[in-house]
Image (cartoon, rainbow, N blue to C red; front, side, top):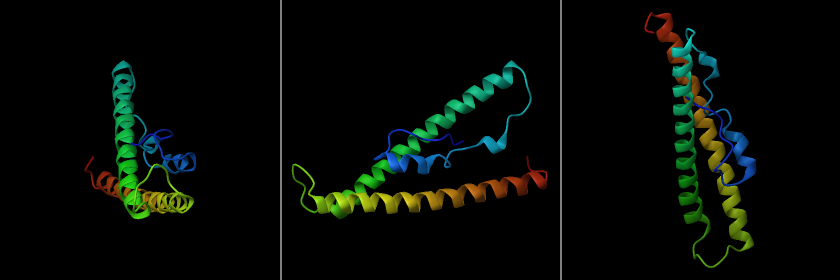
Length: 121
C-alpha cells in the first residue's frame, strides 16, 4: 500500500527518497471487470492516504528531532550553522528512515510469499 510521495517534504532532494516506500505494484491486481476496477480505485485511494500520513509523520519527527538538536535558542531566523545542522540532520534521519522502510517492506514481502507458499493466502 505504498504509492510514491513527491510533495509535503522538507526539501526537494528528499522527495525522491520516498518513491520506493509505498509501491505495491509487485502485488498486481486480481480478476477483472468493473468490480475489480472499483476495488483497485479504492486501494489506490487508501495507498495515497497512507502515503500522505506516513510523509506527515516523517516530517513531524524530523522537525521535532532536528529542530530540538540544532536550534538551542530559537530566534527570528536560523543562522548558517543552524541551517547546516538542520540540513545534515534531516538527511541522516531520511537515510535511516529509508533503510528501515526498505527492510520492513522486504520482510513483509518475504513473509507474504512464505504464507502464500504454505497455502495461507
